[in-house]
Image (cartoon, rainbow, N blue to C red; front, side, top):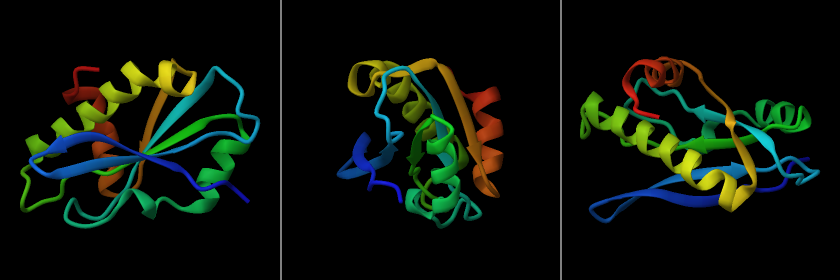
Length: 129
């Protein structure tokens, strides 16, 4: 059984908060690596809470912290705006992870499924972090 995540707004667009759920390993020890999870949904639906519990449990058991992120969805937001959200989420994790959560932000992985897998791949090509 895993504890409920702590939810943070990593970005504000107009009046819309874009959020991330942070799960910490049970030990709560400092220096955990970070796995960023990006949900699928054809870029048009889905939420950060769609990440499967068994995946979160497995990552936490292995000693990784997990951050599951939301991003703005199409068609209201075009692909460059979605990529910008990913960049902002990664920047928030890198800049705040050590201070807020004692994460080792030098050990960061990005994963996703379906459209989230595509976006995880895009973080290597299109983000500044």
